[in-house]
Image (cartoon, rainbow over all chains, first blue to last red; front, side):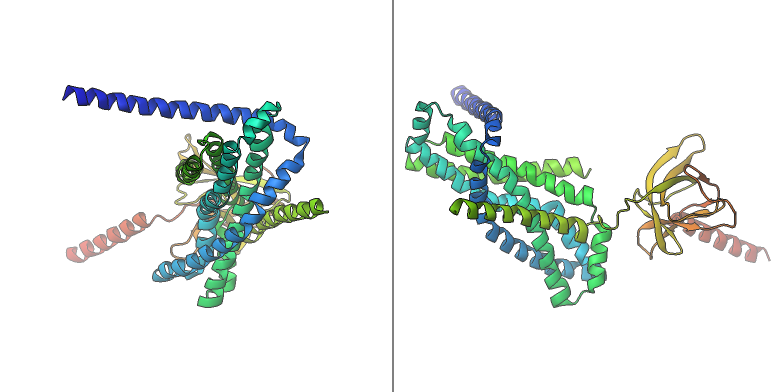
Length: 262
Length: 158
């Protein structure tokens, strides 16, 4: 009895210790990454290439998802608002839910799945193929040369994608609400303008997506950087990117919402 | 050559993002109705402001002429102190009165400004002397009940 209790406690302690070690190592990597980012100002091409890969190629999935989320918000919002006879507020509902919440969060989740996984796999395979080790041999720090441009590209691309998602979503809500259901067009836009504040709603949404950009991109890069250099290790790292990335996004979202809109 | 076309696509991506943000700020948000022109503030004390909030509109004859800047509590007079920011293009006589009104039955609350007959206009920092508080539904109901009770009492006495 006593035996099982002590082994249980020991296991718990070991788990906490490993978690703390991982967190410490991740923080150290993050600081090194930021410290080495200054050199990118001299070679902005590295970042541009990555924005093209991370941002432009994610554009289609983000825009299409935004459109459909807008469609669904239009239909579901109308269904609920109609019960209270206030279907004119449909525009406000669609715009507020997109700019404050759905735009940043859904974009970050899609981004983790679309761009995060590819970043992890790419860096994991570089590590497995000993390309990172080869760079270190040539006195080039892979953190600065490989990870930093990808990190900044992700941080820049995320708010841009989130803004596009929200804008396309509002357009989708407009198509369904005004075009299909027949909500009054003037009321749709004027209620939206009356209720959406540029600073407390739109700007806070942008701030949220910047934080998510940092979180998701760094998690993806770090998982790839720390992956076991085997095919199985890369596969696991890719899975962990999506799982940890999504959980961190949702947790950050709760925290930021509580801070911003309290 | 390939280098250049890649840069063009990235530039297009960023421009698209900026356009989306502009759309959110101007078409969906209230950036276009924000007033960057010159303005002046006047204060008013109310016994009860009800559900008035900062940035609520100030209307005169139904037209928005300004917004509520801030709401505070005056602990000398035990009244709510509302600072109102009015647009400079609209001038009001010094004896204008302010009322807290509700748009529609369940709508938001706003301040209605009724012009008086003074020759002088409001200047920066002036105080509106005649104000009327928000109507609180509970007080209204209790007034109605008391008057009903008084009515039945007077009937019984007869």
